[in-house]
Image (cartoon, rainbow, N blue to C red; front, top):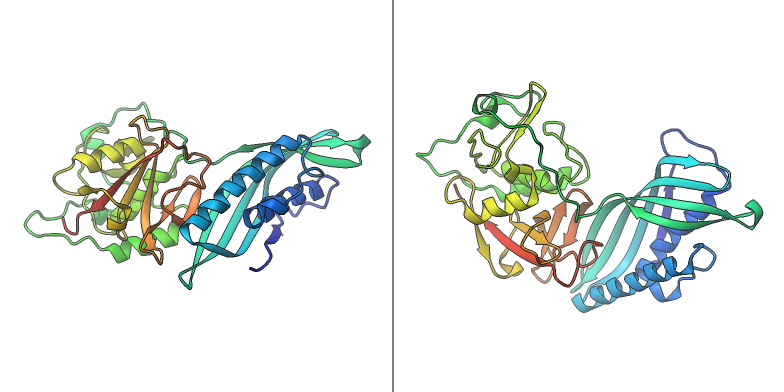
Length: 348
């Protein structure tokens, strides 16, 4: 196993080194270290409250065991830190950071690379009369269990039929001819999912909770036809921004609505619920209900398969590339988590 690597990436302003930054670097190095060797980490010097460090170590041990149960061996782990925003005074610093993590696993003598981008706010506090800084708290700014808010503005049918530049062109808005079958091009889905997993496509609006918007874009890239009803609560469609309004169906960008649409649609873009993730292939969709209440809060697109045939997914909100499908390494995951596996139709 190669040692974990931590890299600092200077933000655009190129700020000079200040006294609290070594504490932030130590925190990120600690996070990187425990992802590979949780039992060897020392949290005393890094955290003002030891229990915060111990909770991170306990969680890392749980995830480490989860990897081992799957037969995945971590061979390399790299974390890149970028400072996004800083608020500071003489005693406290609030730093918004971006962590880009790349993990290389080995399974059945095959290498697999997973990537993820997470954002956090780290609270640093001054100790020992200004000579030592420590981490006093951490707040995650990107989580998979955030609920997408439904916009209040109604959509009128005439506006929904209008073209919206530059988000989509007229060709993308035309309905396919019902007289011929349209194949679902899974290779195009994969290409789109891998190209846009960690950035925004300017042809589409970007949402704070962007997981289902991204999945819908991927499905659309595979050739799935829109069902444009002019009603937010019906069909599966996207127009963009028209006259100050954002025009799209709930099923396009809200996880629970996408789940309901995939469960019930019998024409146009449609899917079949299957009982086992091994039945999924590239271009299929997984919906996640974190607390087992029947309301689904997250969506992912299958972009690859592991050596054991299990699906690997790409996603937004927490930007993820070829991540193991069950998300047991997510802060959102609970023992009550329920999944729905959707096999998208091969033709429409």
